[in-house]
Length: 437
View 1 (cartoon, rainbow, N blue to C red):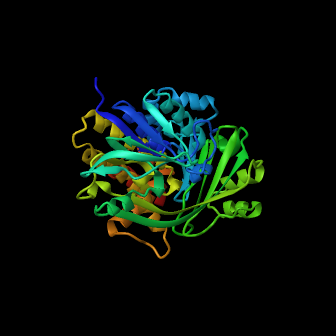
View 2 (cartoon, helix red, strand yellow):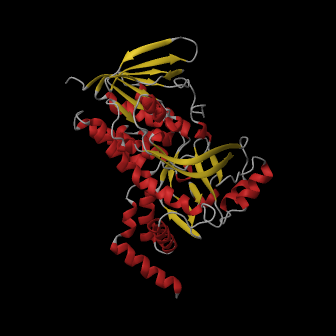
């Protein structure tokens, strides 16, 4: 069967770009995968193009299901490489929500997960990696993408390719909105919700029985104390501990300050772990200024043959661990759109991607707005939704069924509206009545 496309290009070879390339390889004669970093022979370590790679990452259950469907056996092979698949706990709304292995995520470093996926994508015969290269803005002819110029960053010159489709997977630093306006298009609508988030991260040696036998712990921020942390098991018998402050609150990068910040959290688990475990590296910091969503689907006019995926489409506060899973779900949406044909592909894909983004955006932005100084913030419906979620969380401390319902939403397995189902509402009210007596 003749492929739908000849040559297509994907700008960016992080998780979103890799998954887009895998999807497109089934529909194109050739896929050009363009990456600024050297990645082919690099060990699974943080790299310049993924500065957040040094910090805690989790693949949510929804993303894990998509990846396992694309790459059967991936979860097992990652586990053999030392990744953990297990339960843990969220400390939120004043208590613990326990997540067993069924609700668990896959815990591996971003480098290991990306390296394993990259091996599988580059094994495809029609995917060609151009590393140490810059993807220049697409070349347009009469409003349609017709080509791509690739510049080697080692001084090796440039090369031009005829392309029928270009996918921007270049991440939060994407220049696509500016390029579109320079080409005469109206700027796509952009939503920006400031969080002023600051990270500090360190690895510790992991021994059996620590953290109560859990594979992860998350401590959620509150309006009264907008601080958080994530503690996750990783390959190499390590813990990764990421401390998080909002609105310019920087967790310290010295030993005493790091521990003092952990002790300030409402749950003591992270501080106890830090006090007793052996540190394996220096403390690294990172800044994330804002949630950003670019709505290309709402543009009245845009180039044909241009798609956007991953953080270039929407980037979320990393504390919620949604980024890689959202990229996987967007890649799955692209796969479904391509299987339905290429007519109207851009419109159908951007609509489908907007549907993928809506739930995590609602969860993240709804929570982050309530954490900002001087709250409560947002519209009345947003504030009411946040208050209802707090009731659900407190009820979930006592009722496993309610906890599981919330965790399915947090894992992007169910939409936020699942927390408004009549049976669950009645259960929450009943448990709340028990808590008051």
